[in-house]
Every structure is written in C-alpha cells, then in structure tokens.
Image 1 (tube, rainbow, N blue to C red):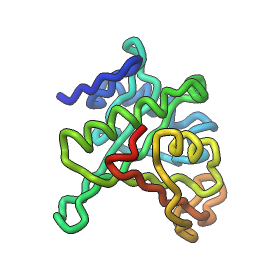
Image 2: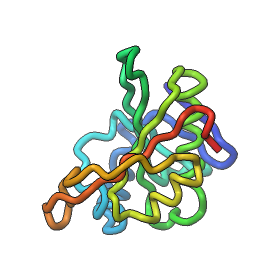
Image 3: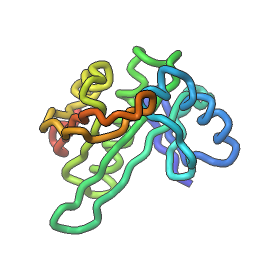
Image 4: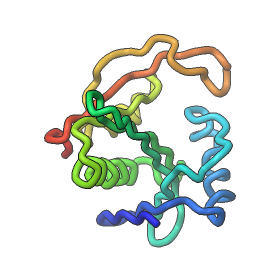
Amino acid sequence: MMKLRGDRLVLRDAGECDVARLREIVETPEVAKWWGPVEEFDEMLAITLAGEVIGAIQYEEVEDPMYRSAGIDIFLGAAWHGHGYGQEAIRILARWLIEERGHHRLTIDPAAHNETAIKAYERVGFRRVGIMRAYERDPASQEFHDGLLMDLLAGELT
C-alpha cells in the first residue's frame, strides 16, 4: 500500500472505504464543474489531512524510454481550497515521481479558463506550454473547451 507523507498531508491508496467520501467531494458543484462524473476511484490516491479524506490525486506514467514522463490530476473539496493543500499534494506526488520513479518531466492539463488551478500549479513550478484546442468536454454544457498543457522538469519543482 502506497503512503506518501508531507508536512500536513498524507497521500495513500484510495480504498473501498473512501469511495463514498470521494464521490461526495467530486459531486459538489465546485469540483463537478471541472471533473464531471467519476466512475472509479481505485487508481487514485486519497489526500488526507489529520486522517480525513479531503480529495484525491492521480498519476499516469508513460513507460516508453524515449518519452518517459508522468501526468498528474487532482481534486480537493471546496472547504480546502485556498489553503495550499493542493500545492502540497502535488509537491509530494511530484517528488515521488521524480526521485523514486525516475521521471524527468511531469505534465498537468487544467481547463484553460481555470485560472485558480493554473496559478496553484505555477507556484509548484509548472510552466505553461500551450493551449490544446477543444481539448475536453465541459461537464455542465457538454461543449468542448480548451485545455492548458503545463509541464515541470525535475529541477523546476519548488
């Protein structure tokens, strides 16, 4: 079972006991507008604060040696927005992906109009790479909106 510790947070494998709580968080209007429906949580790490699940973070790895990298995605309950928890969770996971898994480059791809998330990712060291046009379907309108590709090289993690 994976367990990664930061100053305030612990990231651990999400289990069956976390599904109801994670579903509750992802279905709140503040989170659902960016994430839409989530069917499975078993590939996520629960973000916990003093033992309480406050969100989830996930990663995917590209194993091809020519393109070896990893992508990150995250959501937090609205009550925990604006306290630096998202940044801490990303730093914890990014450090593990770089130091333990050997990745030299990480990506994250928020909606291009999600300035709050973009600013938080920039504080961690991610840089804007470019706009991915009509990248993902908006959960509410079902229209496609642009995504922002951001990346972070190993030496840029703050």
